[in-house]
Length: 232
Image (cartoon, rainbow, N blue to C red; front, side, top):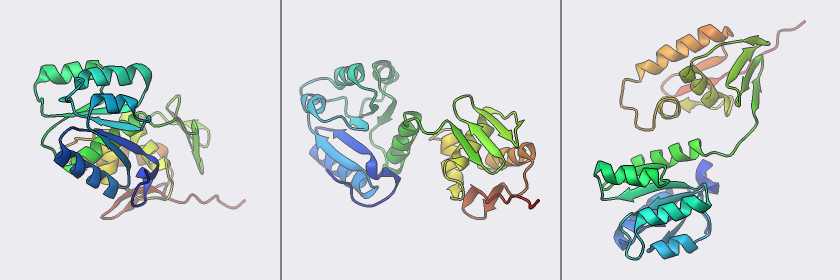
């Protein structure tokens, strides 16, 4: 099933497992508009028989097999990202689902924006391995060892600083919004002041010591700027 729209979500396949037709249709519509390729099924048996997706949105109250059991079986055979989507809001229910392999747990009712943020978060955690060494001018990031150097000089960074730099270095030159950086470096559900990001950006610029390396796109976010090699 092909996705509608364009963007980073185009290659991501989402399986919606929801027996309530109205909820399922709403989820499918919203996900397709966001650029995901979506398949939806109404039962646990159908979910287990479906082709392997990238993300499963799994209702726990299914008519044939309990959703927790479906989660357990999916996790036993695959590392697919699983988000439990359910009306069960008790802590014990969340603990059981997470213990059985769910990556996240979303209680109904919820908004589409929150759901999309949760999907982005679980995909980041399970993203396929890319290049382990990222270079941009004098900057080098080793994603495996989480070490950073500038012109071969090691630069010790805090975990938050490294996460911010990794986010920017994923696509040098592209502006990354403040919210995207906060979701990546802190949490998909960050509710604190965004000024904390400015403090970390300032510290990162100071440690790297390369003027113009991290540019501010006023009103939008930050990016890695072009690095010019001095003549000589």
